[in-house]
Length: 259
Picture 1 (tube, one colour):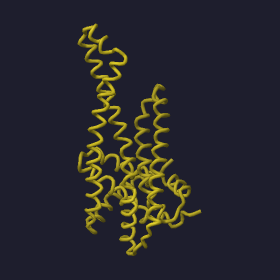
Picture 2: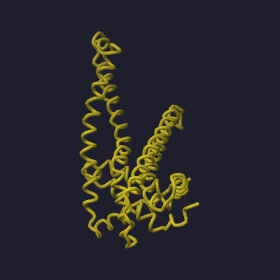
Picture 3: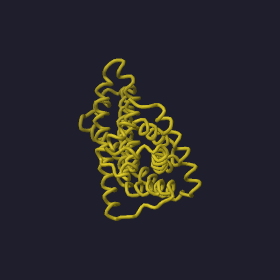
Picture 4: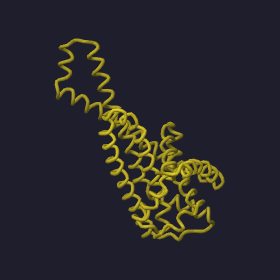
């Protein structure tokens, strides 16, 4: 289970993150990854929508559905298959929307690790010594964690799809899927701070599970921001990293987290 107090505090940390960004004039750290995110997201959406249409065409031609529709000469049947084709393309687009965030976390891992470090350095008014070896190590760890979370999320979603066919239980599976996705996004944002405080990957996973409310709250705001075109896409990634760093720094949760 998770603490609703931690969820609420993680949501409120976004307000602190905004004030922090204003105070320290960190807009370039918001705009650079944000604009990059938008460009890649829009470009990817264009290709996914286009290629999914080609896949539907190929599928309908492979199964001779189009010929069958023409033989029936029914407007209702034609409308049904048009709707089916559109639905298939939307499923591809939603899957892309879900997994693109992980792709961007992988690509942006070096930047987000640095942004988290810079945030804590400003909070504590001290500098963290830069080490290229450590930087590369942090980057690889961020990539591994993002890939791990993507795999775990996929397994959870597949299980939820199976459960969705069970009456009554199936009604709440979309809500559970939303919380699962939010949790894993917040997980990735928290790990930057965990790594900097020298927690191993195993220790980080254990720590975040114990404070899953923070991960859930952080991921919820991140996820909801993604529904705001352009502005939300620009703000979400960097705001999520800064909010998670401020929250963990405020609570000093990590200071006793090594086992």
